Image (tube, rainbow, N blue to C red):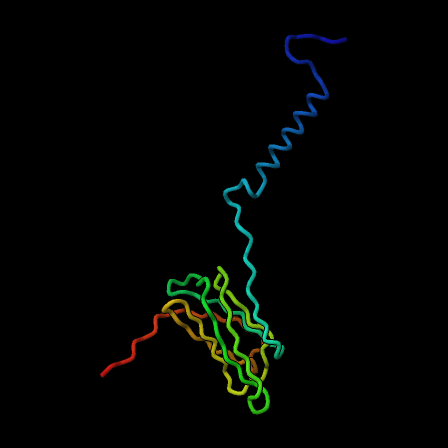
Length: 152
């Protein structure tokens, strides 16, 4: 027996449809693409492999304002082994977080410490690293404007 009241009577199929619509709305609202707070995934840190040993150095290059320096170049020259016959010249660019990692560095170098030189436009910075003292290390390089030579 069915009661007609002018409004829709209870219908299981109608309730199932409404439940599906409600679930879809909740899923869309919870989606990371619809949220204003959604952030892009972190960019991978570039890793330059020297294949000369077990040591590594993770660098973060910072500008004068203390913010990460994107696309800064970092260079290092490494002479190692008997008679300095083995040499590595490595160069890498930083990611959007100002980070880069040099891996596979030799533990014993001919003239420690190594100098990692960073540059971006007219800004430069240097950090030293001795792999025989600290094989796995992290350092920050702050870029500065080079000082003009004294003219007399």
